[in-house]
Length: 115
Image (cartoon, rainbow, N blue to C red):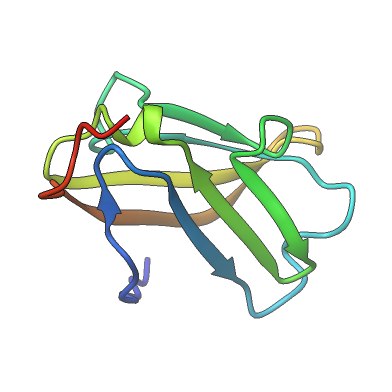
């Protein structure tokens, strides 16, 4: 198994988080459905958020670009450290794991509790 590390934005606890995932090939075709579970660690039993194309947590932008959207209600449950998510294509039988995992840093904001 190879591991590649790419830097990206941290999740700011309590605020909406967006991350665009770009693939080298047509990984996100039109009409495909995707799902992923955000957890605090891979072995964690608590699901912080379930992100799907149906609920707007995963938004297809093109055949090679998918946007991950985590609402503030979900990020508000995260503590400083990191969170993990992977993606599964759910319109296939059986569902197909996309063979990548994201570990995203989580930070506590200075400005919070405004809502």
